[in-house]
Image (tube, rainbow, N blue to C red; front, top):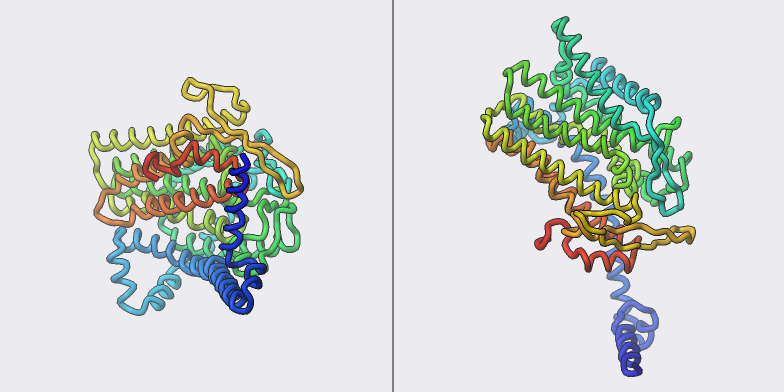
Length: 482
């Protein structure tokens, strides 16, 4: 026992002697030791400064400049160049790239009467349903500052009412030789308008978080660029409306479904029945339907718990989601692919199986936590870790980490069926062009990056309990590989 203690002391002493950045070590070896230690400290300071510049200035500025242009180029590629990035690049490089981008933006009618009517008309519709539709109250996870957000769980009914109303509107308009597909015909104007209005909206959220926050989960980093990009408030509310529920769910996810429907309708008007469009649309709508059925669970994910309401999340859900997420259907409007019965059935079956696995993985975690571990997973009592953590005010809380079922295979196993599903609704577009695969590639990068963010968050939150969890479930996403 004494030898173990002596060994521990020797290791501790050795580690202290090897630490180059403590002031005691800097001064212990005289001037030369001080000089060497100071230089190392200075180097670390420079490294931290460079890291802060990259993460809080360069990356935000790059994304805020590039992403609005990317979504416009995506639309331009799909509608003007039949989904060929090669043709699009050739077109915009005939003159200078900046002149081509200026011409592209100049060709769309930003804030046209039609675009404003569509955007504000839908926003009013969504807010009315958000307020009027019934739903039980659900609580989100407690925040580090001790706040517990409360939501009205009426997302599924909002989705059903919206899509049903859209179908009825289609039937009515068709009697007068009109169609909701006019949204496709003017989507460039709508997308340009969304870009501008969403940027303005993010300015409003930036100011609100600084001067009139809805909770104590707010504040400034001292960097105006990063604050605008990341947000100054975690759970902003305006006139009783939860902003992130509106932008992420009632707008982004619902508009995705609406556009898939409209693009399928436009395809039918142009080409008649096209099986590839139908297969892709069914899989996308099935996934979105699952999302709204499980919306209360989504409100406990990293998008809501960690990401503040700034450009990153709010502009992303208001502009990026409608443009990129529905891009496979947008591509298929001008590029019909005929799969045949076998491939249609095969892809559809694989996609629906992916949705099922994704749903039941999420369900297992919710089931175990709601039952406090007193339930069965795959016919057995679940293996769990009761992880304790401390809030900023010193309160100690407990959460359950599931280490069996789907969650025993990898820490983020549910990302696998989600990526596979995106691949299955992309495959009907074929392999003639790269553009349809933009979303599934983006999703793979996003979820891989998110797995690291989530692990860092949980490691900081749960400490040794998370280390225990990682030992029991060593693989991050893909079992036995990654």
